Image 1 (cartoon, rainbow, N blue to C red):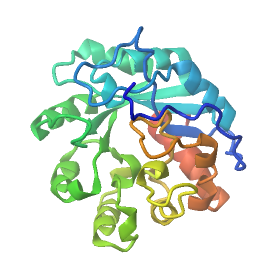
Image 2: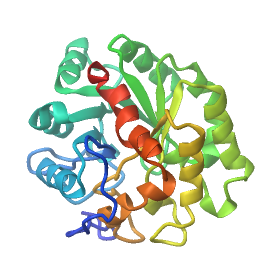
Image 3: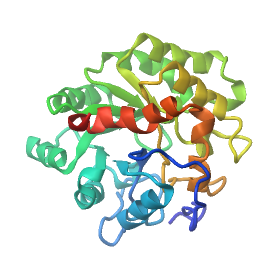
Length: 292
C-alpha cells in the first residue's frame, strides 16, 4: 500500500437512514487480495487489499441488497478479481469492466455470463495513461452488441473537450461522481451548468451522485457537495445512481465513514419517491432489466 494511502474505515457506523428494501450500492470496488489477484504493473497507485468478503459484509451492514462492482485502474484490464466477486455474489452483483481493444469475443461472453454489464472509460490523467478516442469507439461498438453500456470517469475541466466524443457513443453512458465538479464554484457556475446542460439535452446520459468525500472542501458531513447532488437528483430523477465508492481508493484527505455516507442520501433525495428511483428503480433498470 502506498505510504500516503488511507485504508478504508474499519468500523463504519450503522446509518441513521434506513435504505429501502432492495437498495443497490451502484459504485464500489474490490481490490485483491494481491497474493491472489495481483495489481497491475502499470498502476498509478497501490491500494490496501479490499476483498469481496469485506465488500459483502459492508453491503449487509449498511442495509443494501445488491452491488455494482466497478473495475478500478489499479487492476488494469485484468478483471479476474471483479469476475471472481461477481461469481461469488451471483444475482446480487453486476460488474463494470475495463477491457483492452484486443479482448476476445470469448472473453466478453464470459464476462457477460459472470454479470458484467458495462465497460469503464477513464480520462483522469493522474490515474491512467491517455487512450486514443478511436480505441474507445471501437470498444463501444463491440460491447453494444452485448447490450452493455459505458461508464466514464473524467474531471470537470476536461468535460468541454469530451462532449463531442460522449455524444457520439452508441450506447447509454453513466458519468461517475457528477463529473467531479469544483464545489467551491457553486451550482450556478458555468462549469457545472455545462454538465447539467449535457444531461438535459441528451437522455442517453446518466450520472452517479456519489463521492462527496472526494469532492468536498469542507469535509464531513459534506454540506458543500449536497446542493450539486440534490440538483441532479431533482432535475433527472430517472437517470441518477448512488454508490459508496468503497473502499475509497486513493483517498488522502480523510477516511470516509460509509455509514455517514449513507446518511447523505435523504439530504440529496429528500422524498421516498426520489429515494426509490435513486436506489432501486434506476440501477435495476440499468443492471437487472430482466427483473424490472
